[in-house]
Image 1 (cartoon, one colour):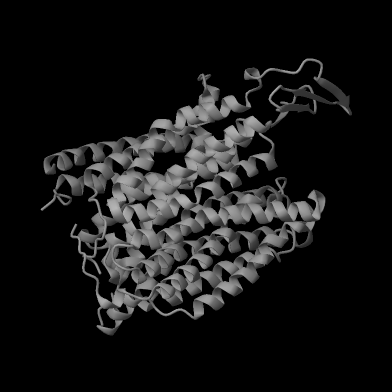
Image 2: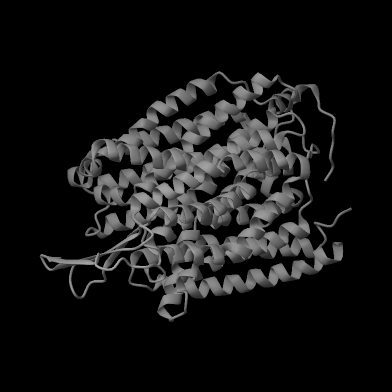
Length: 499
Length: 72
């Protein structure tokens, strides 16, 4: 790959202009991620409101909403809006995705429940969820391309890293809003109507973001291309129909975004699922552990994005993947041990057992402040275990999640600049969006499901430490991706050959 | 380095075919499951993930073997 230190005049906007570009793009993208995550974070409540298990059609629609929006529709969104962005421009395309995302999120908050309108409720929610997935598929590529095309040469890693913070911040804000609403209105009211508040709030957030974005100019590189009449006539055919570009799309997917996707989902989502399901840590406490880790690690995106301008994107991204491959098993073993009551010292005389209406509740306390509670509703049922960690255990667990989120910042911080520089301006939006959403959405998004399936398989075959078996999926994908990246990727710093 | 890139191409093709076989066998067993979520998950793996992995790795391996990623 060629490098260049010379910067065309069009790429040297004043600092305040770049800050506005970053702010306008990042706020919109953050809101899109927020919109996307609140559905997932409130999946249990949404199921009870719209997808009753006793109705098989509603249960089917619920499962489709889970899988389709994340894994199938996102890449389609990348194709539809990527094409549009390369034909008419970045600015109007990512305005459209924002309206689509905000509108569908707001409407989910307005849909009457299954009890009120029957099967129409889950059908409406499924359709709106699909629109969310479609919009998300179009948003990220547009925002990353827009910021990168405004950035001065040699600073793309730093400037686009602000966009990279938005996915994690979106998750962070969604968890905060949900926890705050739940605490404000109370658990019962939250489950009745309060869950709608985070959805309705989206309308305000999107309105502000649209106002900011409308005032922005089109990207300078796209304007130049358009003025010279060099925009692509058929971005999809140029991106995926021509060998010289298709081979780069494949390299981006198999040498970077697939590994990035599994590291991203393992560090943020599988970690939370593991804490809740394998370690049995209490729901609110487990969410606080993740929220604190996300808050501490988020500057890492900026740090590694900026560092990639100095030493290149490749070594940072590949190191993040390698660390995941080498350390996931010991990290998850340590997480399990932190909550394992058999490794703690029980306080004698504080074990309480009570029986009420056929349900037996046992609580135990440990010297490190951890409490353990078991509720067994009938002798044939499996007991529901809840562990509330003491202070040392809480911070130890947070530290172990933090390490994983730091890996996330390593693979994710530089990747927008990496993808932008891999493809020519005329088909950049289309070409970078698809591998990103296949890598992040399909390879990454399936991580919790494939990992859980591996754990279940290991449990049924009696494998020792079955709870760690789910890690083989992210470990193997990241290992293959690391090897492909190491052998085939060039180390890019200020690649301008496509500008 | 170019010869390593080309030789590795064969490895990616073989890996793509193996993962494809493994995933198809696993998905078919899930599609036959009583559990609705397992059935849909099986279809997603069969129709979305498996073609991406197998098609992606085989095509990538083919390009690598033909020297498309050689440094010139």
